[in-house]
Length: 272
Ligand code: BT5
Image (cartoon, rainbow, N blue to C red; front, side, top):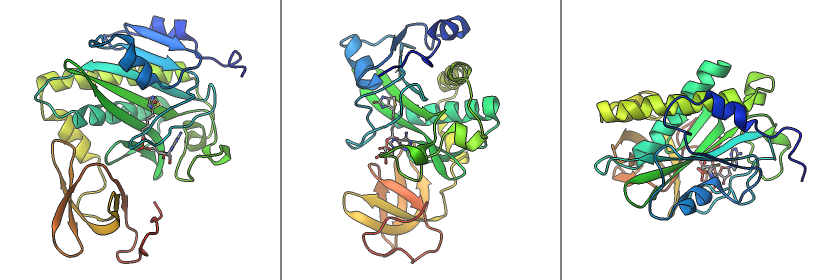
């Protein structure tokens, strides 16, 4: 595979980094998964702010054993290690990353974003970025960020029609390096915020979530079911009142807004 033509310009990234995020930066033209790479790189102790970034993943991973796909040299695919306070839910590190990506897309490309529980950034209701948070030993989290940039997901085999990219949403290709630097800068800012105000990330994330009070369809290990999203727990759990009236707390699930309550047929995935 020829990655040479449009590989990331790592030197320009290094030159543009200002804070602790990316101070230790490892680039691979191709790797299995940047999360796996970062979790394995320093057994027992990742360095705060360490970043592994690549132009292509052969085994990119999502939640729940799903895959993350992106054509070579098309996207931002990286993982960052953050020292994470023991008393702060790991789920809030994923919220922090989503806020950082949203800020970067808004400041760099003027894209209006929405955040979707538990780990997505959307533009026009379609997924532009997925985030995978994995805890690592001794008080670190590893946040894997996959941000679709210069390709058309509708022409990429294996991708759902609910995917979009910066190119599609903004109507043109953008340089990935300044976008990465903007995400790194926003991560730094939100991370500093966490140390000053424990609730800040959770509150900011909740305020950008268009889910609470809405009719939703939930897909979890029990199948599809309908309900109303009531509120979020600081540990990332979503409290949903099911149709029968009982409240359920969901973590490992996919949740979609329902356009028309009651229209979902059993076993069928709703339209986003
Ligand atoms: C996620 O999982 O959204 C987390 C994705 C994290 C990817 C990054 S890339 C860098 C780092 N290294 C890794 O190995 N992973 C992280 P989840 O919510 O489970 O969504 C996965 C689902 O999204 C898949 O089942 C597909 O349906 C869909 N999908 C796969 N690739 C996509 C893409 N490029 N854009 C939009 N949707 C995609």
